Length: 191
Image (tube, one colour):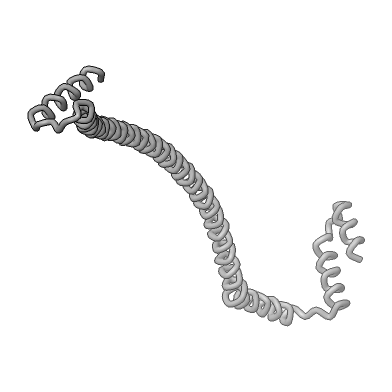
């Protein structure tokens, strides 16, 4: 029926409006549509739609927008933290490099100080060894002089004793002194 009404309108039928009204009425009767109920149902639909919009869809949409904003904030925070972590890692690497450089400088300084200490200890050891050698030479010289003095004294006594035996008499103190001096002069002259 509806198709025939459209074909009449397309053909330029003059009573098209009447026939269309008749067709709408026929459809209303066919589907048992009553205009008063249709209006009430439309009004109920609008009221339910407004109530749903106001109390259901609007809060749900607000909640969804809030969640979307929180998600965006979370993503932005994650990006900021990622950048902060990258900066922290960069700073950490820089501090580690600086600490490594400082440690290398300290090790080099310690090596230099150890080398200087070693050199000073060697120099001190050489000085001490030289002092020991000088003291040993002085002690040797003193001992040599003491030994020479002892040898001279004994040689002088032997000369006096030998002279007394050769002369077969006891020598006087004056003669003993002359023989001792004479023997000592000869010993000094030979050294």
